[in-house]
Amino acid sequence: MDVFEKVESQAVVADFVWIEKLSNDSFEAAQDKMPVSEDPRTRVWWDSENVLPGAVGEHMCADVAWDVYLFYDPGRVWDDDDPGAPDAFFHKLSECPSDQYMSRYDFWQELEARLPDCDEVVLDR
Image (tube, rainbow, N blue to C red; front, side, top):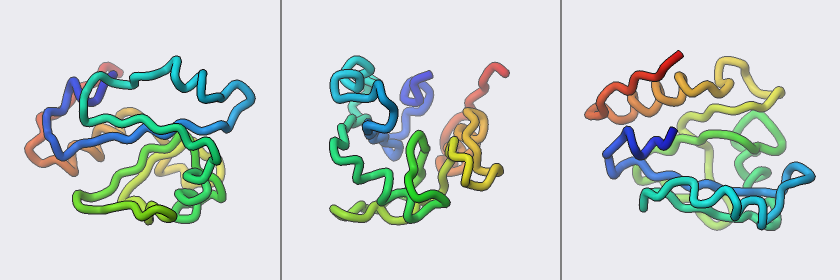
């Protein structure tokens, strides 16, 4: 589901960062999955040196963070070397707390809480 089909707020932006984590991950494989969305609020990056997973992991519960959803409050800016601690996150990492394990329902609940003027999104269970 494309988040941007459901949420009109310009306060929501998404950066998708592809990394080489699994044996079949590559720049070419990432290109095959792009664009993630046609919405101009999305940007896609290739982290050829796998810098971001370690930088994000330092602020979470893992040495290396990947396959995560990070929420940053409006106005937060990443500097070149440190994205800072996310204001909220969901993950699929075994070493992180289970109450923050990623589910699409928790993702939408967090997004709706951050956007008071957002219409409720009903997902099929």
